Image 1 (tube, rainbow, N blue to C red):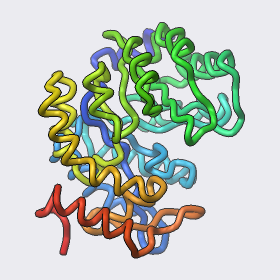
Image 2 (tube, rainbow, N blue to C red):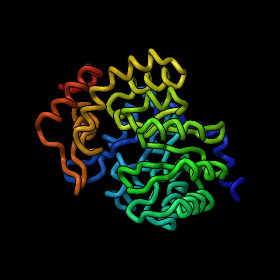
Image 3 (cartoon, rainbow, N blue to C red):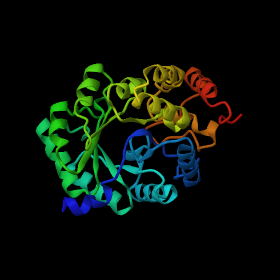
Image 4 (tube, rainbow, N blue to C red):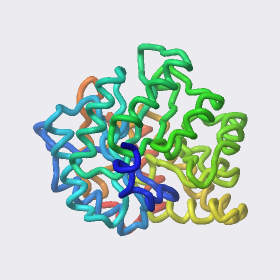
Length: 308
């Protein structure tokens, strides 16, 4: 069964600069597909090499089922095969995750980004069975996603080492930013299992240390600059990567001034990419120092793109 499911994905190349897309909403709270289309084009024109739809930055858990379908199917059609489209399909329960992954497969996604189950606090044995079950029955290549700060659940490297032998699991997005975890995860990378950073602040360090790319939040705003960072770091050009990383640092630091995606969405209107409004319980970033810091950092990186 796995051979037939994944035969069309053998050449799938998930690496480099990957954007965890925000989901724009209209002022009345509906999906803004026009703005989403502009965001997709902005990414591809800027050199983004794959996109994630309905991840945590995309407010996945604020989307209704029909909105998930609409957003993902729109992205697949709009992208038209120019870059891989990865769907966020992680749920707290395994059966729900399998069902959502199968739905993403039916809508044309190229792979699934599956976050560790949140809130329920599974054991490492439970995590192994969870991800294996999704890979067995979800119908898409699976990228593991570990972000303990959001989920309260940490997928340990020794469990990842077991999961990478599954033919349906093709990589991991590791968002733990400590040097020890970066090094341990880099050791797991191989030709059929890709290590992707999930933290913009340590992306250069991770890629210079062996990560094949980064699933990024800041790339929503400055895709060309982030592609420059990824190209330099994955090529082992430490001096060039450090220089680009230093240019990006003020914007990355500014975005850390409010929870994701509140901060990154605050900048979308300046780029003509939709409203700043997230969905409750998230609220729009208020006027003040953090918003000003984001705008000034963005102007320095993309002065021609920022609307007056």
